[in-house]
Length: 448
Image (cartoon, rainbow, N blue to C red):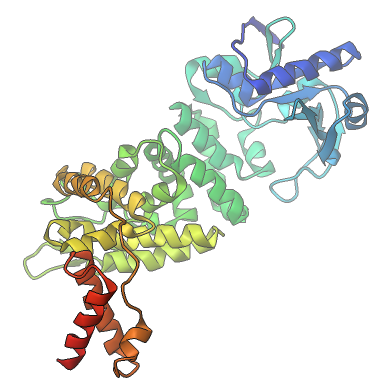
């Protein structure tokens, strides 16, 4: 039965204004049309919606005939993009799906009515329809009820919904974490039943969902749920392996590596993808390097280096862009260097701050400390140094190059790099500041 509830949605976003105009035009032509899905859900939660989708009884050809600027992105599935005032709005024809063979796309689509269109969607909170002309919400599946009670519930038979598209299992987790909702029992049970099938989803789609979780408001809750539902073990066994790996209580009173990682994620504030994945994977090298030292304390020799290699393999498996992989790998590799920053020479510190990934590494260090011993002295020290160096280039251009060293008769080989490294230290420490002074130093160095 259709439940109708009065609901005033304002102020409107530009996307909503365009969608409302499209709906008005469709209705003038005698067609049903509504805002559907996430935009309705978000407004009921008093959140500003992002994308705004329209569902209508008009078929794709009719939609394209009515609106002068359109293009079909999924005409076989009844989906057309209408462009109004340079805003793109997805307009989809009411439909019901006839079976899925590949865990993603329906085998066949039959255009239908609004009720059947609601029943083929994923979760009740995403299947409400809003009529802007009468400020009414039409709800066939109990979405309003579940929204009020804070529940993520699959529509109809949960097992069937997930079989249609296994990615919905990750979407369920993402919505539960994002809104701090509970997963309805049968829905959670169906996810556990089908968890092993998640590996059938393309790595790119999996990465997109995981990235949305990590950069969302409650990434720690998302990864707790992934673990509880057996999805974490399927997708990121390296992260799952952190569970139960003990750490020295002196540095990590919070518990094992997995607990520490969840607390670190919680300590981040709206991280971007590079920081979020660096946080998730910064200690991924601890399980394979775990050992008990001669004093009976847990240790993880070279875990940053090992973790960096593992990070690259994980992100390559998820088909991430090369630059993204390089930056996250570098942050994981360098995260232990911050322990000794107060002992570093100024030249070493300036080189550290010149790293392309330094901003990510600095925030990772802050959150790492906040999630463990809570000692932020090194973090504050680095902030002071950033202020001190603010008017200086982090790493100035080298005063001399390799050909300058070779011109003095030094043969090609490692000695050239050693000499240039020594000169760089002197330059960064302010002891050698001009090319002429560098050439004089070089002459003395070679004579020695």
